[in-house]
Image (cartoon, rainbow, N blue to C red):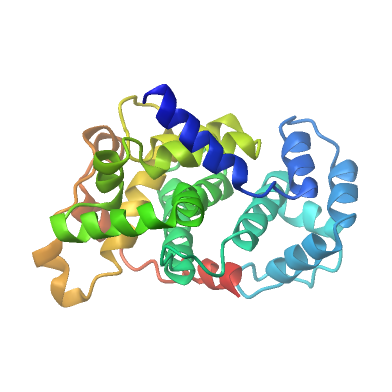
Length: 283
């Protein structure tokens, strides 16, 4: 990427609104594995809107907790600091999505894909026993993997329309169209936005690498890449599945799971229950 393009991307990222102060503080605090639960509770409770949304989500059918959660203090006890951090991060990100876009950005479709990818990434983590990470880490990485598209759609809408046209007319993916037309895809600008919002470095790397797999070893990234492709496949009509199944996993990712994408879909079987989590976040 040349300096001029990098500057243009930085200018677009700078226009994105700042992340809520409360969530920034949550991210900073939880970066320390020994952080104080009491301090975390105090930060969240000083944001009444965030408090309300977290409690609403935790009391949804998805979590099915044994008793109603009426305080943030109790929620930390039940589901843990890391999950609370990721719930807050997810809620804040969803709240910042545009309701309208001059570039024809479909927020509903974007959110659906992001949430389904998140749920499948979490499932993959659990199925393949990647015990170094919590499932909620994979969920939030899946939710945020395409956040760079929002930047393009909001602050360069004419170019975003052109990208969609190039994608459709040439039968290529949007990120390939971005690379051809702009020279940098949404993963790059998404990682820049993640850095601005002070996301954990591992999450920034995951966003930036979900279309550019060159190095092995990033388990969360690989779960997100596979989930991203699986979410596109299950969105197809069943009758089209065999004829349109032309997506492949990068070799590094396929090696991690020990199978290709079609075999992985069959291995997972019915995961409709896991997708219920998407309803909890989207309502």
